[in-house]
Image (cartoon, rainbow, N blue to C red; front, side):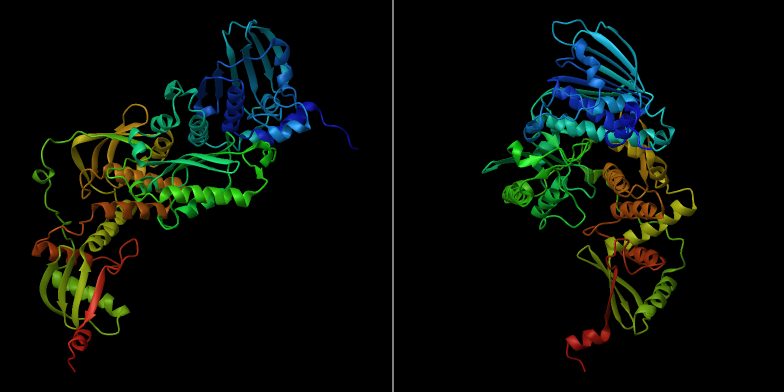
Length: 577
């Protein structure tokens, strides 16, 4: 028997398309506040939005006679007829958000239109509770709580607090970048996360990231026919290995379009490696009848009248901007995208406080025996057996180490050799022991992260401490680094932590691959560098340690460590027969 579903059940079904997590609720309510001409918006979260969401604005408000109507499905003030779908200039227009939200939560809305008395309307899981006068002074305040309590099957699919909170942080950034003239405030569990004053786009970018980012931005101003592209792209200092700093807006609406993004990436093709992502905040303005935004209830997808032409225009505008080499190359002193660091420095030359590289003390057999053991390993991959000839060792150009063997000479890259040594020892310590030893920092560093990255930091804190970092929380989104891995050069702490966080953001796992990445990142930062002068004893100790490793031929990133130059090849070069 076919029958029409009750309206409340229809709303709950529709809510699955519009509202599936706290972030989607915040998105719909933010769009309503912006459409209401607000110039100040405050978002208050409890438990990352899972427990309660409050949004206050100073917009035009809602009349008493229209408050109830706002919660009726397909009721909207944004469009009136089918023709309006071809010229949509508001963020909301479908009339689905409020009834969908009200069907899966408890809602209390207070609003006051100009020259009217304010009113409060409460609706609980689709059922009206009351409509009464309110003392609200202006605009609208809406409170959403107990999300999905009437739908346990839906509620159980919500992720942890940090996960849901990060989605809202990402959403906040999307809206605050485009609507830079609006005061935007975000509070979570009583703590102010952002308090952004209305300003220009460049000032808003600096407020969300760091003031130093302005030196790494390239402004885009491009117009062709009826298309206008504006905004900023980042130079090579802002390239990252994970997505998250790509913002695309069409006629004021944030959208996701893989093909347009690919056109932008292709403009950087000769400048960045595969798997790297540039920074961009770009706005495309075009006649509203050139696109259709009524594709999906979440309104993050659009259809274009001529998508190929739009892709070409994006690629053309970006390629043109990147032709300025002086702006495109990395900034002299690049500042990380999402962090600020405050460091106490000693007021004299670093040469006076930097000690010589001290290699890890060897616990392996004696030098000659290690050479022989390594040659046994080498013999597995070489056609000719290598036998030790002498213990003569030389360092050339402060970069390579050369030593004799019976069949010729071997050349070792000192940096990747030390990297392999540190990698294997650190990986073993993390997996089997108590972790790496730590060295105290004379002047502890205060590092500030953006709110999103800080939540990731908390998730991998255990692993960072296993590789030798000692730090504690210090205020909102800040830590104080008091100790670092024993071989890590002073000043590399923040950079190393950021790289590990970025990799975690990209992979979202802490399995064996993550431990390997942590160990390889630490090893790369801590290893001696090309150009470092080593004594004869240090060279020998380096070889000693290298030949004690399981894999002395390649560094953790795949670069060769040892080159074997057979004597017969030398003889051929000198035409000895």
